[in-house]
Length: 451
Image (cartoon, rainbow, N blue to C red; front, side, top):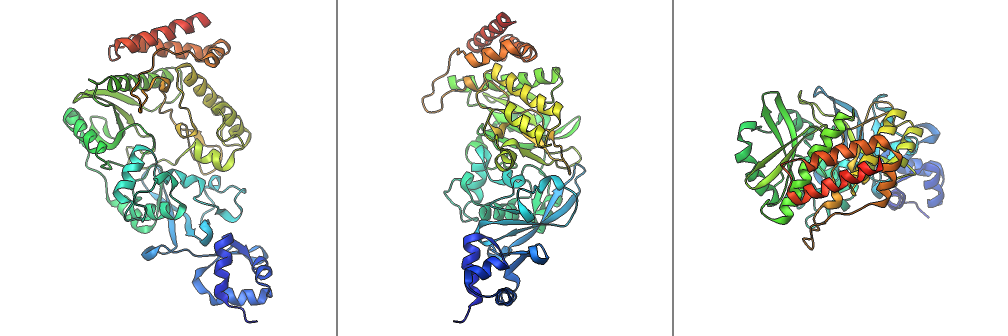
């Protein structure tokens, strides 16, 4: 019986990557026959590794774009470095062909030969997500063949195509493909003048609510837009969150929460913990919270940030557990120093004591280095989310108690003191509604009793 080389395509479709011996065994032919068949298939066959350990994949091209692209990593100075090439393979697999010995931290032995079952974990942030991710999907979904789909469920092929076609200004420091690199180097958005914020921000908020994609696709569900701002200190790259109209009860509560996020950052910095710089502005009946991006530099450079979610899902046994447990595994595996692992645990305890019920793994990030350990990124999205309005019912939560948080307060005096400073500052802020000031004062008193 003759053997047809193209029949190997089905084997690659089922398994993604196979050795010559595995292909021969499945096809019931000799390895020399497989070697000839692979040669006949030409450039569609992707050889991974060398010698007897070599494995093979089958290229999965995207229309006019091909199936492999150079992968660049921008530095803080704005200079890109090619760290390898990304290959899309049949079966949904992705292979990173390295061309540098640097950035060893990206390539864990858990993924032999740098073959990943889906997107590489360090590119998972490039999957559109949150408020701006939906805006990205609305704008580009049709061109990517994903119109009407949930961008959070896009497969590697769709995300890679999005990076190649439209990924010149995604969060983080990676850029995929020469065309995206060219655009990234050539383009810089027109800045918003600091003096014109009162006029510009309300208009940008309305555009964002209408589905316009303003800036790069930062994650998170809070309505926001991304801008570059001209200020006396130079250009700043900002994420700007905003509340609903403050004349509405839901809008007032979100305005309170944005002020709370601003105060939380100030308290953390007072205690030596790096938190994203922020500033509050009320304009057009809304509250705006400017948060400086830590994945960008004033020199036009970028910072390789990865969420704890992306790293933990791929590499940690404790994925999805509270941050202190993940922090300990990050320390044990060399991803964080002992001091920074302790700091991550402390941040989590502070969050619990300020009623932050939304400390999932997407709300903490690491800044990657060429070799382990990484560094903790500045704290962001730290606010009392237990008091956010219920979107479906419109209900505004009143004072609540967390018995587990009370145990934390009794056992960890530093975090109790930090949380006390937070609630006291919030209770005394004229930017906060009377009702929420009362809630804050009650929390401050409760923490004092635990001292």
